[in-house]
Image 1 (cartoon, rainbow, N blue to C red):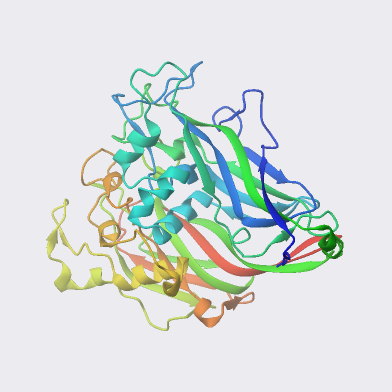
Image 2 (cartoon, rainbow, N blue to C red):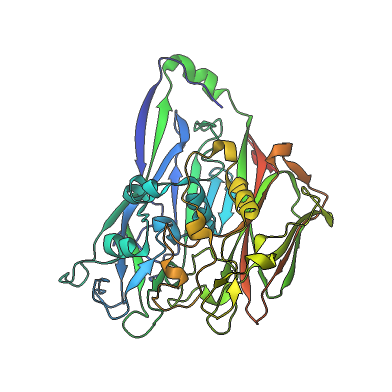
Length: 466
C-alpha cells in the first residue's frame, strides 16, 4: 500500500472502452462479447475501490433494424434476474497487468458469484434503494420489468428506455485496500476486461414461452465508460514513488470452477493448489435452464427433479473433506429435512415434506461469503431460503421465478478463514453431497474458492502466488 502525504490532491478520471464500433454500442448478439478499459500509466496513485463501470442498458425483443423495444403488454413478457441487475450481463471479470498482459485476477461465472454476494451483503432496502439506482437491482421481478426491461407502450422502434448505471465491480484485487502506483517505473497501467453473458442467459420469459415474438430478445450496452479516483502526488513525492520499482500486494481472490452432477450421492473433488484457502461456496442451477429464454439461468435454487411438477430436492447429508477425510468439521451435517417428525406440510406433489431451510447450512453458506462479524445487512431470509417453490417455467405463484425478497437464494459453503486459511496446495479438496434427487436431472454446480493471494511486481512483470 502506498501512502500519499499532505500535499497530494485527488482527481477523477473517465476512460472509454478500448474496443468500440462506430455506433458506440456493445451487444453480445451483434458480435461484441467482450470489452476492456485501460487505466494508462501516469504520475498518480490509483484507488482501485473507486473503479465504477458506467453506461446505459436497453432491452429489445428482436434483432430487426431497428429492433423493437420490450414493453408492457407483450405476448410473452421478458425479464432479467432482479437481484443481479446489470451484473447479470457480466460473465467474466479479468484484471491484467497491462505492460506484461499477465492476469492479476480472473473471476469466471462472475454473474453467478455476484448473485450470492449481493444476496448476502445487501438488505431489502438496498435492493429497492441505492443498488437500484447504481446497478439496476430490484426487489422483485415485477419491479424489474417495470423499472428496467419495459419501455413505454408507444415507444418508437429503437427507442427503448435507456437505463443508466454506475456499478462498482466487487473483486479481491479491487477491494483489497491496496493503492496502485500507476507510474511506468512501478506497477504501471491496469486493464479491466469484461466478458458478456449470452442474451439467452440474461433475459428470460416470465411465462416460459419462447416463440417468434421474443426468440431474438437481446440487450444492448451503450455510453460505456470506466471512472476511478487517482491521487496526484506533489513534486517532492514523485521521485520516491518512481523509485518503487518492486513491491507486493496481498488480497483475497475468487477462483471459479464448474461441474455437473446427476446423482443422489455426488462426490466433488479438486486439486486446488491453494496455500491459503479462506472459504468455498457453491450454487446450483438445473443444466437445462442455462442459455434458454424459457428459464432464468441466473437463479440460485435448490437442485430439482426433471419429472412431474419439477419439485426441488433436499440434501440429506453434507460432508466437507480434505484428503478424503472430514474437515474442518469432523461430523456429518444432516439437514432438518431428514427428520421424519418435520414432514408435516403438504406440497404441490401431494407429499408431506418439511419446507424450512436448514439453519446450519444457511449459516455456513452466508459465512463462506462474508464472516458473521462483518455482516451488518443481508436480504437472505427464511422467505427466500425455504423450499416451498417448484422449478416450473410458467408464471405461477409456486414458480421459482416469483419467490419474494429478491428471489430464490440457496447455496452450500464452508469458511476456513477462522483458522487463518487452510493449505490445500498438496491435499485434495472435496465435498460429499447426498440428496433426494431421483430423476435424470443434470444439475450445474458453480463453485467459488476464496483464497489469499500475493502479487509481486518488478520491471520484468508480475508473479502471482496463490
